[in-house]
Length: 132
Image 1 (cartoon, rainbow, N blue to C red):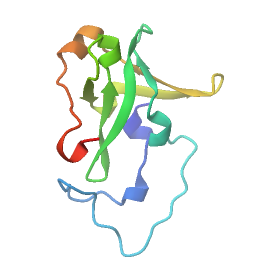
Image 2 (cartoon, rainbow, N blue to C red):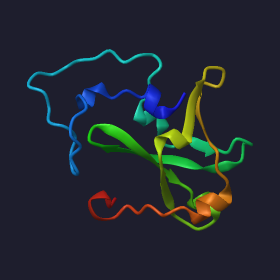
Image 3 (cartoon, one colour):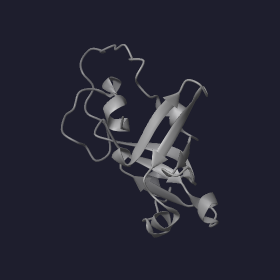
Image 4 (cartoon, helix red, strand yellow):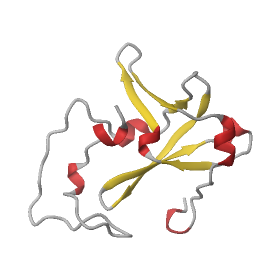
């Protein structure tokens, strides 16, 4: 299963017109939900190692990107893998497969990529409003 399919964020409101700086307008009354056992919480994703299909380390999940109440990206920390210090890349959520392994009691993430693709990927920088 892909992240967009299983990660439902109804708490952010229903889909509406995308706003550049915010989520859709809040409804007049709160809408409480029950989170399914198949959902993934972003807090459980931060720090998860991402591997290639062959099991080679590609980086770790650093952040989840939201726009207009929808997940639009996953930020990966790849600097350690590339030996280049701090370096981040943003990927489409459909590029990563995330699953929970009951036998290991932990999350696993895989991506069909290699080191060369990470080296040539555009760098994401925590600057401006995203500065840490």
